[in-house]
Length: 136
Length: 136
DNA sequence: TACTATTTGCAACCGAGTTGCACAAACTTT
DNA sequence: AAAGTTTGTGCAACTCGGTTGCAAATAGTA
Ligand SMILES: [Mn+2]
Ligand SMILES: [Mn+2]
Ligand SMILES: [Zn+2]
Ligand SMILES: [Zn+2]
Image 1 (cartoon, protein in one colour):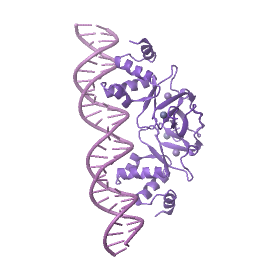
Image 2 (cartoon, rainbow over the protein chains, first blue to last red; image 1 turned 60 degrees about the vertical axis):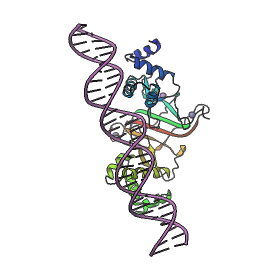
Image 3 (tube, helix red, strand yellow; image 1 turned 180 degrees about the horizontal axis):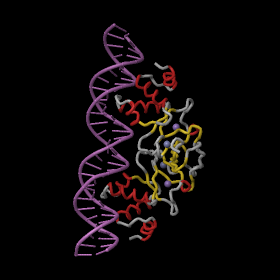
Image 4 (tube, rainbow over the protein chains, first blue to last red; image 1 turned 120 degrees about the horizontal axis):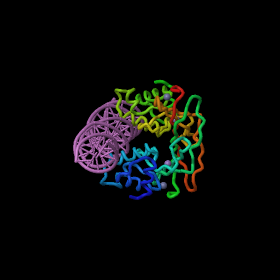
């Protein structure tokens, strides 16, 4: 339907089913990351496992990335166009202890760390907890 | 019993019950962080909720800190003597994608981040995933 | 059209974490 | 010491996010 979304799906090698278009649309509208339970609330008629597998597919194809923000439910947000989720693509996340929203700080790359000898890096999850600009 | 452990408990204002002494002993022996399910395996005769509440107490009193390493179960490790779990006390953690062990990199403080305007910081969880020295 | 691969819906399940409640143990007050 | 109070423990039940097997539906292909 919407060519914007279909192009995004196509670019990431994901077949554009109705469900996927709808989920991608919702993900696109968000300014903060969203969880599977939240998605279930939005699509109260859609099936949990379908939504679950949609997110898994999106993540595998690097259309979205997941953030373990310590809230108990994984959060998901769109990747940048050229993102491959490699260490150099990663950014810092922020979770507000008041409104509970999880922000992608896309402009803040995760800092480089000098690991101890013989430790090799694959990825980094850096989540800052605090109070966001809306709640401050 | 063991005065080392009792002193540690006393310093953190925790009454030294038998259960707590045993759990602290196990925590002290570990070189990597440990989860509640793992603790249940070690104390196969102890009750889950008692262990759970023991960890909660330890964490409240800042005898231990918790690490959400993305494995699905929270990991726990002893705090340094003078640790108050304030931002300046925090260190980086490392989880091995082969042996699944979670390491405290006590010598690596979490990097300082310049947050966007009106965002204020409370704490940071920085977990690096990769391969540890034992598995490399 | 007939066949095959992919996606979806449903139900059941898993495991980590959490809670209410009764009993036990420790600590206080008389 | 006895009685009363606070704290800790054990058990059972439960919540909830996540996950899976399987059959029906849909899409893609020959
Ligand atoms: Mn992000
Ligand atoms: Mn640590
Ligand atoms: Zn907020
Ligand atoms: Zn390892």
